[in-house]
Image (tube, rainbow, N blue to C red; front, side, top):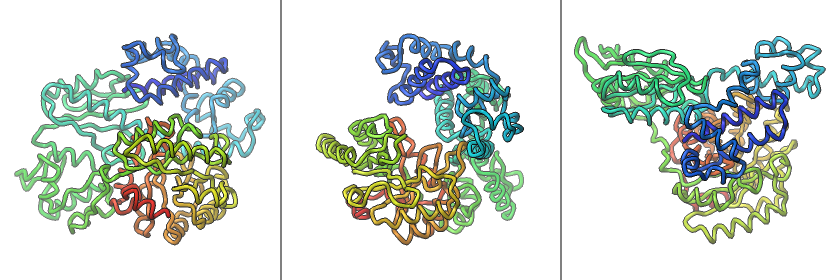
Length: 568
């Protein structure tokens, strides 16, 4: 579906207009269109074709025509015209936490700052500090945002990479004669950010496959095109590479182009120790090819068990494979529910019934509705009275929607002193309490760490949500001592969350593995604010797999009865 791509374009258009100082009503109208498209659970192309697109709240005839234009041409003329009126470097500034469109517009119009390079050079200038809304603390937040942005520069979030990969795979599978298509590289290993999306293809004519790839809808630029490999740029920023390999070499090529550099170096060294030679074309002994058709066959000839792609990082997987110690990793089929979700009661876009029915359709046994607590007013946090009203609605939904259990929960703020946002007599009436930090990110490490540990000592707190607080590419993790937090989690029996949202992935794979080794239970929560985001549970599952986790390490694999006994 093109929903997300078109939503991104309308959000970008709103940002550009706000940078230019356009009428705020017009800016907000485009943002509403973006939000409506993000929340759609059906293909926008079908709604345009049927004429039902204008029945979607926020989408009028003009924006419907623009959506139709994009579906036909791959762009919107009004967007291209608006973008041409501002310096190209301003769009990069929008990716930095602490710099909204209004601020970007102000520094451009008043100080002629047109790029990240210029902003960094003048970050502490008196003229910048003198701008309304600026100050030393604001500058410090922008500096932190720049560091976070530059650490992930040139890389895309997993959600974006997945969308691109699925689109390319679908196009390649249409090519006559193509028999196999697979994502490779860091995408197949499910790294938290992706540089280029790599896709391998076999079967049919290489020329036909390359031609189909370079002429795909959405291709903005062909970077390179040869007889068996091509690279294109999609949406101006994202690079995708396709390589066509022979059927007889498929396994060796997939293995070579999937593994990290470090993993592949270890495999080649292992081959040499056995008097063999390993490369992208196969495993050889002298001039004779021993194996190349499948990955499993190549690993077997090396004396190894097949290594799941997520583990191919040279973190002990080679030794574990040789010694028969590879773990049984968690799979999507093991997941019985989502333990962190939001609804329209706070800042979500779906009703509890919509969330319940979507969860039932996914085959879940249970979900936790954990809307924000009263202190987080910016997210429409629930007062105690509203929390009680929500509980009544959850009871009603559970009566009407059979086959799925909606558990009563909250994402309660961890306040500045480590206390939890609701009193104990309110928390004890809930099935699941997720406690998270949403403020005071700049506090010293001891203070942040102490807040989390204090919250975990509350017997009603079941899960610590997004424990490090990072937002990938926008905000660095706050200065939390994760080892102390893990020790306290093991002691108190509190679970730590792997937040599945592609902007968070928090805990990450390294912390998740460390926590599990320390005996800490982990939970997966999509933190979804709309049913269209529930799919991101797959990101959490693969992050858990990268952390060597089996189903026994995740609360989401428990039956409803077992889960409630853990939280009782």
